[in-house]
Length: 92
Image (cartoon, rainbow, N blue to C red; front, top):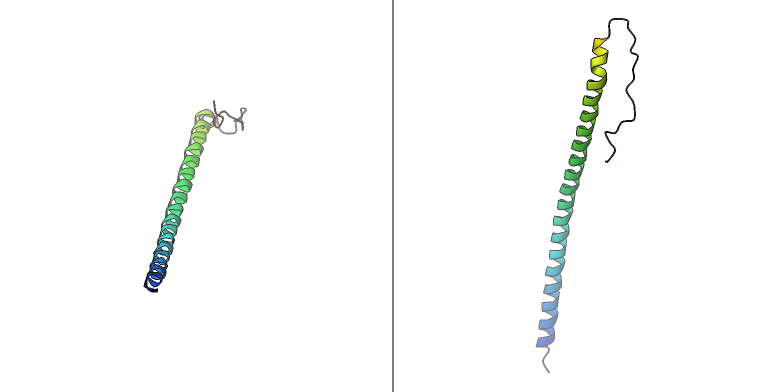
């Protein structure tokens, strides 16, 4: 009986395992890079959203209080207040 088929199977299996391992490592590296890029996009989106919300609150403040403050005469007290709780962040 010849050992040639057994040796061929061992060599073929070894090469298949080697290339499979290499492919898995390459896919893992690609996925790691893609995950890092996705996280950067999520963080940038969150920061942009926060910026927009703060800008909306600032505009509301300027519309409501800014005009009143500008209309005050020197030494005249501000007799109104800006509520801390508004419906800007509540879902409808």
